[in-house]
Length: 600
Image 1: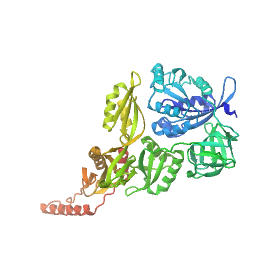
Image 2: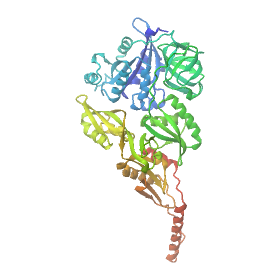
Image 3: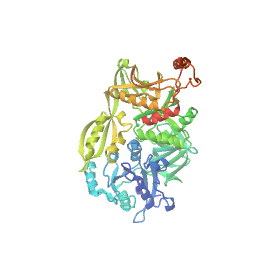
Image 4: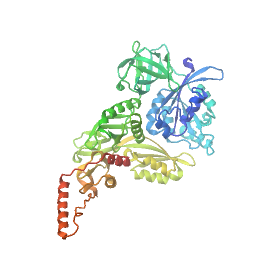
């Protein structure tokens, strides 16, 4: 095992689809970490979901052995990171386990929103940044323009950039030389008390909670008694090892290394990401700083389609939470959908990925309620509360004001799309704070927007207006007062909880009409007319009527006096009136599923 001076820990950061995982493949090939027969595209993207969508969802560690020109052996620990804004928490955790970062920039698309956000995140952590100009072999690459952007936007000298092509392998030897020469060796001594940072964890049905650890000092071996300093849990190590990229058992993992720990801690709640692991016999004096608690930005109710699968859903969410510290959930019940969970997510893509993982990994079919954000409610008695469930909104008479969360969005767009994008921002109740020219073709807009307005279709419409060249990054801003109301949907006079939402008063009529029209299409007809209404408080703002399922009661009349037919029709009319008084409309699950899917 090489000495700590010959260990380098680094990650790859970039905007989504700039070639992080492809470059990881080339690095693994160059170091012969995997044999040619074991290689496949996106080898570090272990989830089928990641391969299908072409995005990285989880950070993936791997240890590579590299021999330099002098035939000296080096141990290089790489962590591949996601690029989408919803998974920036994964990036921050990866950065805490490294001393350097490869900043990948697409030579054709240039510096985009997430490139800037991830670079600033790495700079704040004090990491050494090595810029890599990727896709240099594309016919429409603009290396000179991108190098100028690198200097103007990120203040990184163009001389430091390495031209490369992750697809062909061009520039890979130069990248390795830069990693060895520019990134510092890890600090820490093997003879000091053992101290490791848990930067990720996964659940195994056979081994329990498996911790991904960056060791800062000391060493860990199988048989050691460990102590988790924040959760106050202790256990015994069953196995330690490195990633290559699969888990490979080792005799020990020491200071400067990245590896995994398998212990007798089986419960999901025993392990917390960001915790410090040390040895029970010689504990560290102080815990590592860990991570700031992540705040969910979007909330939605998740309910099993089959109510008997509620315990299975709870177990699945607990296991996903171990693997994804950004996921939070609590028990919730609905009169229409039964027992479920109110879950918090970092964004709409994060919510979609969790639902898809529940379906694939745990064979659970779930239905989700309309996504909502956390609102601050100031009451007339001077107190205030925070709610994310529209049904928890107090009576209007007791509310002094409602404050909604905002975001500060950074939009990188082509010059010719400024007018359309500013119109979109205005439509979403936002305002442009400032504009900055990036180069002759691109401009950066810094806008303030309500978080609730960007949840559903903002990013999709931004991509459409900019022909795919627009990109967005955002961070949570302040809470501001707004004229918000709860929009209820009533079917036959009964409010349907999952369809309730908090909307701006000016949008209530349009939103209510849209939902009523969709419900009219989806609900099955009954033997009586059904009123589908949208209401704000006691005021009905939209209405649709679902016609009755007509039965021809006069079919048995083959002739005779017209009064016979009239008598039968009057009798039917009386029966329908009585049925409407006592009738109850049962909304089928597939109608819930269709309308909530079309809403999100």
